[in-house]
Image 1 (tube, protein in one colour):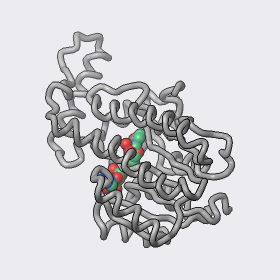
Image 2 (cartoon, helix red, strand yellow; image 1 turned 120 degrees about the vertical axis):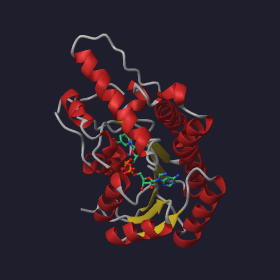
Image 3 (cartoon, protein in one colour; image 1 turned 135 degrees about the vertical axis):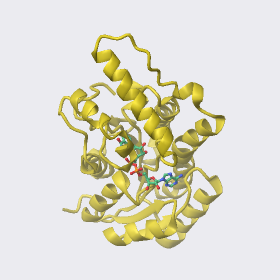
Image 4 (cartoon, protein in one colour; image 1 turned 180 degrees about the horizontal axis):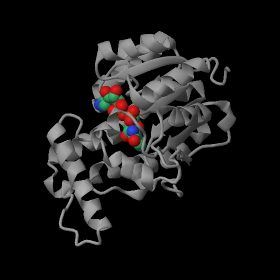
Length: 274
Ligand SMILES: NC(=O)c1ccc[n+]([C@@H]2O[C@H](COP(=O)([O-])OP(=O)(O)OC[C@H]3O[C@@H](n4cnc5c(N)ncnc54)[C@H](O)[C@@H]3O)[C@@H](O)[C@H]2O)c1
């Protein structure tokens, strides 16, 4: 298939997980793919695996993002698709905190199922530092803004382009213990709608994907709580990376040329209104 033939796409946080799957499907559909991630070697390895090129940058670092898009302009001379996918769960560097969160979730669910009372509290917000909060908003919300702004400097003169922002069901439904993450994802949905209205006169579309629970490194710390999540999901399972990658292909292709400011939510029925 060639649904993205002739398009150049940059995907942030694409060295693994959902971003890598998007890169792989974009390549199969004929796009030139630029893999962004934090570590240059890891990004280059992922790019080689799918037949793309790579540019490392921390999306929460404004100057690094500007330099990355300058490089895109000089290497490719155009940019048709930006996927703002890079993300963190907030406990990726702290296994103890991840285990504590998971254990509290399990204990609270057990108390609830046995009729209460609830004596285990999640307490992530009262325990969060200023740095935790700013880092979460920095990677997701600042990163989405920095990359979109720099991408538009290439797309505006082209008079065409497509921006896809990675939201989450958490941006609408909320999630206990994930206030900063949910705030960032809700912000991304508002940013998507506003930017969609702003750049429609430039023939640029801006949409979001709001995945449900997807089986990646991002959710691996959940361990046995994944069974609870699967049980709460009408389709009875977590999603796989291709469940999101195919939505990205669809939104990046001309099949959705009448869609902007929308949120597509592959989530197995977990949340039915975005
Ligand atoms: N996995 C899920 O259940 C799920 C659900 C909803 C939304 N999402 C969103 O999907 C996106 C991808 O998630 P995933 O599950 O593939 O996660 P993942 O942890 O497997 O991959 C995330 C990638 O982003 C990169 N990254 C992190 N911070 C970065 C930064 N500052 N600059 C550049 N790259 C950075 C990481 O190095 C990693 O390669 C995230 O935005 C996440 O919030 C995931």
